[in-house]
Length: 406
Image (cartoon, rainbow, N blue to C red; front, side):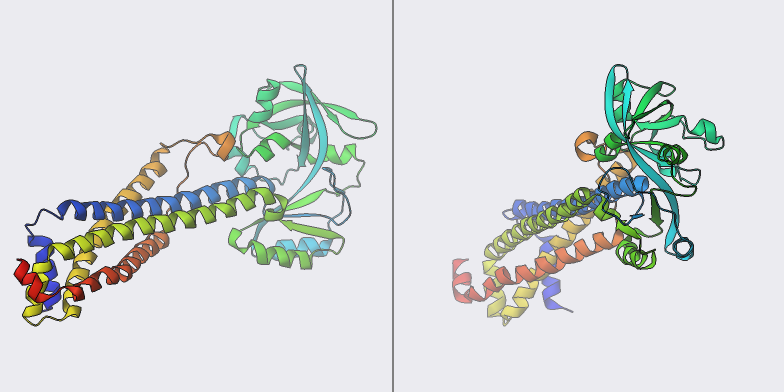
């Protein structure tokens, strides 16, 4: 039988001492809370990044293709997609789908209020799946009747609230060009993406109207939105698309279209790392304190074991086994607490956020088994490695003094 393990188990299970019980419980609670906070931090940050990313890519796609020119305005320069570009986009198995669009700056006039917006024209090939998920009222544009579709428009709840509009209302849009052109539209749907840059800046309409206002040639578009099957492949696919499209075109990945949002999301990773380090330090300090108190409290036992021939290494293992037992209890309780709170939030969305500030109206949670496993392993390994230092204190205990002190 493993002598060190036998003694450690007796200390953990059969111990009648009360002096160190409070400190031991505090140490277990420290490990539990540290692990729970780390699990929740990683889950919330990953969930937050995923939700924001899906909102942005759901509205503008993962990669956008424009005409290569010096145009820096809100209105895209027209181009006619060549056959080789379209063939490549259709044959690329990493691309889920692509769709055409065109933008044109405009001014909405309604209820004695005006609002500058960017009119985004889309066609019958446009996927409204994302918009339907965030539809507040009304419906999506019906492209079965092209003439009727040119008068239908979808606006955000942000714009609707500012202009005091609702689904079914009509208003005038003045398109910015020389001379300005005005068109009357009916609101068929109101959506709420939750991203201010999108809700505040865009409305959805028909691309054929933009083509007609700009006197474009048949088939000309302002841009192409590409949706990937796997967002993790954005960088290599974006580079490949840039190489394969016509030389008169340029492509931008989503991270370059909205760099501010994605830079902000990257900064969250830094915050997460800092929080993980702090929580790990808290848990380790609690365990070090508990181990030192257990060693000091059992100085007599240490002296007795040494007088009977036990080595310092054997006695160190006794206390390390005991510390590992306490860490294990803390891990079990920490997993129950962290995963339990994550599950409750996932099912109920109990914890709410201010959507204006955070782009979401609830705290998102995304739990991955790999993350939980790595956090548990890191806690065990780091704790036991660090606890070797206080465990070495047993070598300083004199058997003669310890027994005499008793």
